[in-house]
Image 1 (cartoon, rainbow over the protein chains, first blue to last red):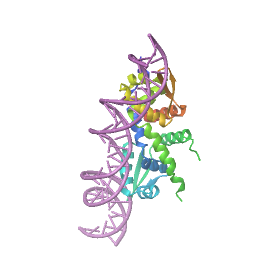
Image 2 (cartoon, rainbow over the protein chains, first blue to last red; image 1 turned 90 degrees about the horizontal axis):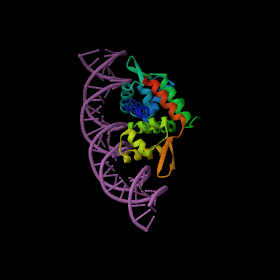
Image 3 (cartoon, chains in turn yellow, cyan, red, brown; image 1 turned 45 degrees about the horizontal axis):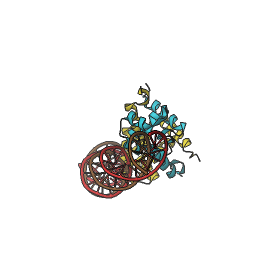
Image 4 (tube, protein in one colour; image 1 turned 135 degrees about the vertical axis):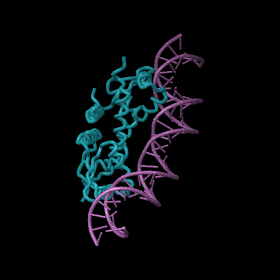
Amino acid sequence: MNKELINDDLAYTLAEFYKIMSDHTRMKIIYALTKKELCVGELSEIVNMSQTAVSYQLRILRGARLVKYRREGKMIFYSIDDEHVSDIINTTIIHLGHEE
Amino acid sequence: MNKELINDDLAYTLAEFYKIMSDHTRMKIIYALTKKELCVGELSEIVNMSQTAVSYQLRILRGARLVKYRREGKMIFYSIDDEHVSDIINTTIIHLGHEE
DNA sequence: ATAATATATGCGTATATACACATATGTGTT
DNA sequence: AACACATATGTGTATATACGCATATATTAT
């Protein structure tokens, strides 16, 4: 009778997705990447955190297929995997009334 | 020079928003509420958790203004505060390819 | 092969948080 | 007022996780 009101698998999957976006360091990284492809060193400067910390978060973002990467010599360039992600963020920004 | 790539306040605010949605219990509650207004007891049954646990999460959802509520006698009915929330979830479902 | 540079990973720790339990508060009924 | 019922809240605890440090790996240059 309440079948439409509950969907455990979906709820778990959704929550996992949002969990990735729920850390401000990761969000800074994601936000920067929605604007431009960047390598780890650049990201490290932009978000003003250690290379280790950025790398730690990039691994998580990779695991969740939120970002993709390509090697170019010593450097690895990261970018947003899917433009849906940008859409979701933009919708949220509008929702939060945080446009500037 | 990288001003457009970073916006600390916004990143924090976005991360906080997604943090609310990053718990599967809360997501079950939110999901059910996107379908229908419900009281605490009904929610408790639907997500199959104790009244205390549901109440704990509802407080957090209230604090984040993700849900609103109205009293009717002894019961309190909760609903989604803003239809933007449903939009964001629907976009995410499409993104995840989890439509059924 | 060695060195230098860019990035990744294992481990330890401090912090955050979801939930259980007990209890409090608010509302209607008698 | 006393009681029952629906919901909320304070406290303790177990678990999850972000990040630092040290170190490993991968790539290019000498």
